[in-house]
Image (cartoon, rainbow, N blue to C red):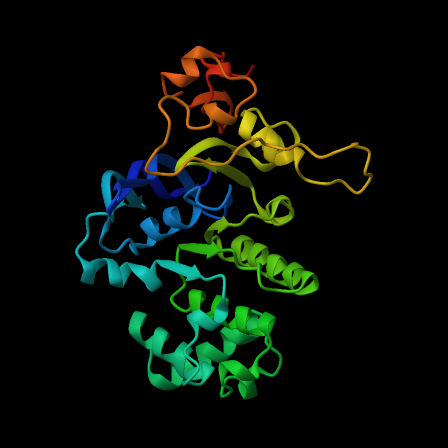
Length: 327
């Protein structure tokens, strides 16, 4: 097993609102290994992006990490002061945002933004930083990088802007990259190119990637493991093939059953009744119990603890409580 780069242990994130405390993450725990792509999926509001924000230190007031620990190669980072976490962000943890236009300043040339980031996190000279920026643009597939480096963001297509954002995330050779819906705004053909690029970077650099997406096709193509989130909790986490082909948690089964197939053999897709609860009114016990067809009395009272089914495959469901390892 590769080295554990990031470890989250029972992380709780809360936001103070007029209607009370909103618990966006409710006891999230997982490890992320070097050279691994962990896909994170779930409905809107499940806590996917908040998990990434907590990891990179972007939970701003009135939000806070109420409890738990986040460690980067053994060093606790969730309790670092703002200046210290700023040095970690960008240098050791990179971020790829959904919309590249929000990550790039339209008033500055692409090269200026890359060089500034490199100079901030390294000891390179300005000349060496520019050369490194050109090499990064070449690595992420920008044609004629020595010329395009002096272009403005609006002079790049959506796919090329996303490649520039990936280059920005790689500037300081981070150990972890958080990719938050990196292909959502792109054409299908461009999506495939970006997916291939992320996979190549992961394999060649040994970078750990946390890939946040709602696209199960992207997960199937690039992820090694997948975590299914619901109402700020992890319902199921395991190897991507095991979770996609034979999901165990009723919610994960519903998600996978809602994916149309090329054969079209199913008469109708699976529908999950109801909607995810408001995070200020999460029901007692299992958060999914109001929508679950397999609900039991215990599900309405006691929150299920993660049960290990096979190596690295866990499910938080009373249906599997006490299951022997390897069943």
